[in-house]
Each structure stands twice: as C-alpha cells, then as structure tokens.
Length: 579
Image (tube, rainbow, N blue to C red; front, side):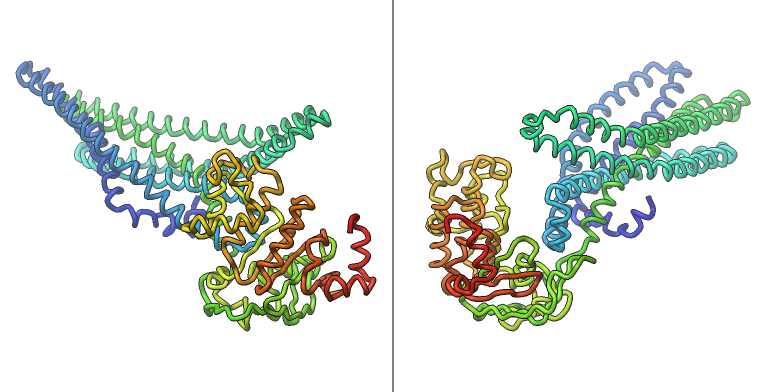
C-alpha cells in the first residue's frame, strides 16, 4: 500500500479542506458513539457490580434510570449527528472528486482518452471515487476510536501492571507485522483478479452487444464456453485472495484471543491476591474486550483499504498522472482574424509507429472549403486533428492566423472551431439536452430551431415530446441518419469560425446528403472548412479537393479539374456508382 499511497498522500486528504465543518460533525459522532459504548458502558458495568455487592438498592435503581435516560438522549443525539455529518461528508468528498476529475478527463490527451474509451474512464472514476469516499471515512472513524479507547485503556492498565502493556503491545506489533506481510502477498492476487474481472466484464459486454449475431450464427455455446474460461481466469486468484484474507482474519482473532487470555489471567490473579477490587476488574476486563475487538476492526479496515487503494491506484495512474493536452489553459491567448491554417514541414507519427505525415506543408486559405479524400490510412483525419489542435506535431509547426498551436492557449482557440466526428456523439437524454450539452446552455428557441432546419433535422419536432423526447442510450431510438443530423445541428448551433467535418454524411441517405451538402455550401461560404468524405457526392462542391496518399498531397484542384486530370480522384469516381 505504501508505494500507492505515498506519492499521492497530500492529494488523498485534499477533500478534507473543503468539508471541515461536516468532517468535525462526523468525527464528533464517532467520538460520542465510541465514548458511550466503549468507555461509559464499561464504567457503568463496574459501578453496577459495586452497587450490587453493597446491596444499595436505591443507588442501583437510580443508576439504571439514569442509564436509560442517557441511552435515549444518546440515540437522539447520534441520530441528529448521523443525518447532518455523514451524508454531508460523502457529498463533499464526491463534489471534490467530480470537480477534479471532470476537469482531468477534459484535459486528457485526445489519443490517450480514445484508447481508454469513455466507458472505461467512467468506470475508473466511479470506482475510484467510491474507494476514496470509503477509505477516508474509515481512516477517520477508526483513528477516532483508537484515540478514545486505546489511550485511556493503556493508561489504566499501566497503573495496574507494566507487564500487561509490554505483552499486549508486543502481541499487537507482532500481529500487525504478520498481517502487513500477508497483505503484501494478497495485493498481487488482487491485481491479477482485478485484471481478470475487467476482461470478463469486457467480454460479457461484447456478448450482450452482439446478441443478434450470436443468435443468427448459433454461436451461443461458444460464447458461453469463453465466458467460463474468463471466470476460471479470475477464480484462481480469487481463491488465493479469499484464503489469505481468511488467514488474516483468523490471525487477528488469535491475537485478540491471546491478549484477552493474558489480561484475564493477570487481572484475575491480581483480584484473587487482593491487588484490585471487583469493580476495577470488571472495568479493565470490559475495556480490554473492547480493545481486542478494536484490533480486529482495524485489521478488517486495513484489508478493506488495500482493496480500495487498488481502485485508487487506477484513478491516480490512469487519470491523475495520465498524459494531458498541452497548453490547454496556458500559453498565448488566441485571437481569430481570418481563419488561415498553415502546415510547415510537419512530421507526425503515432507512438512508435510509421510516420503518418513527413515534411507536410500546405496553406489552407481563409473562407474556403477544403475536402480531404483517399481510402483509410492516408492521413486525412491526422491532418484535421492537427489543424484543430487535438494533436500536436512531432516537429515544426501548425499555425492558425499566425498562432502556433503547440504554444497557443487552446482553451481560447477551441471556441472558434466546430468538430464533427465519424461517430455522432449523442447520449442518453433528450434531444434538447444533446443539443445544449457542452454548447450554449441558454441558447434561445429560435436559434435551436434555425440550427435544426439548417441540418434538416426538423423531424425532432414531430417526435412524441418534441425536443424533450428521450432518445435512449447512445440515441438508440433514432436512426443513424437522425443521430448524424442532430450532431450536425450542434455544429450549426455553436456557429464556429473554422469547421472540421469527418464523414459528416456517412449515415445519411442520398436525398438527405444532397440537402446537407447544400446547407454546408451556403452556411460555411465565408468560413474555413475541412471535410473528410469517402462518398464523393459530399465534396464535389468544395473549393479545393486534396487527394492524400501516404501522408502527402497526390492531387489538388476542384471537382471539375480533377475529373479532367483523369488521375486518382477520377478513378475513385468511377468506382462509386451513380456518379
């Protein structure tokens, strides 16, 4: 646990700064609860025995009545504290986590974020947040119990016999050392099991998503066999993990039993020899019983913390320490003037792969519509991501209106652009929520309506609840073309200065594609526009068509000139029927 906790120790306790009042109530509730059931009840049992030995009926009844009244007041008080402190502590912890990691996720390097995937990022943040919440509360709760129980008990025991303290402390140190050693062995199995469970979950999700193909191809038994294999992969580490955990629990019980046995033996002999009274014997026996139980609870907490820090390690390594987008909130502020995009001897490769672009130079003039065409792998999307600031060139520069995108403040640049990906980004919610998410939250109805008309998405008004119609997870209640037109409407609603469209009509029928192409041509006539399309119907109205081959410009011109050239573009046209 130390290698995980140490680098982020300050961060781990950072939520406490924002919940001082609520944290005080939480600790105070634990303090009162422990004080009552740990110390006061032990004192009362001791006092009860004394009154019974003295046969003091009046004192005994008075003590019982007082205990009953204090018990009612105690539960009323702890109920109030529980419903003011603990829920607020949880809310403050989650508020800190969501604020921090919503920002961290937005700052992630785009390639890295795409490699993780949104579902995995959500899982990492969600599980890490739950572990963070539970770990913080457990530490403060058990630390408070230790202060309330251990210190008074050890002080009382010290007055009776130093041997008791030495023996009990030695047993606790020995037990803690062995538990720490066992936990080190346990961690390896936990990590192995966590990886196996992740693989099982991924395969199960793929099985559910491909249920129609499985049914059609009658491969259900094959998939079930593979699921059995995935279960077997995490069954073995789970078996070892369970065995070690059981051993740790049993060891904690043995240590607690040994401490209790030694204390009862020593205190019993002290009572028989007249060194302590029966009241003191009962008080110390009760307190040591509570102390032994506390030792077991701390062992359980330590094991839970080791589980929780596995999830926290994922959060910190995959999100907290992950590669970030450069200059997202730093650098020279961008000032839009015309929308000129220029590549100067740009080199780019993904990780250690082959170069995608090599000595790529081109000046994209302001106010023109550029189309990038070539089969997959030619570098089209890379050019767009470099021009939009979602990737950084390995060498030399990409600039917009003279501002180098490797040094400019990207948060001032991104509002000027609109980017539509191949896969339309729609989520579970209403059409209105999809249009406004990450966009203008207070956009007026006429602006929304204008954007929908420009995208030929008027169908939204014909749905049962209009713009407030729920469209399901990833827009399953809409057709592919409808989802694409909603995504295009978001571009229109933002009204950017530079527009990037990656296969904007890939999911549209021929009639809708023609309408959208006309809308693009009229709406973006004064903007700098980049379009990637395999269906050349979309790009024939572009001012300039660039045919990219192996990261270099193979052909350049408009539709008519490239057809007349009879080169690559012309051959691509012949392969597309109906053109």
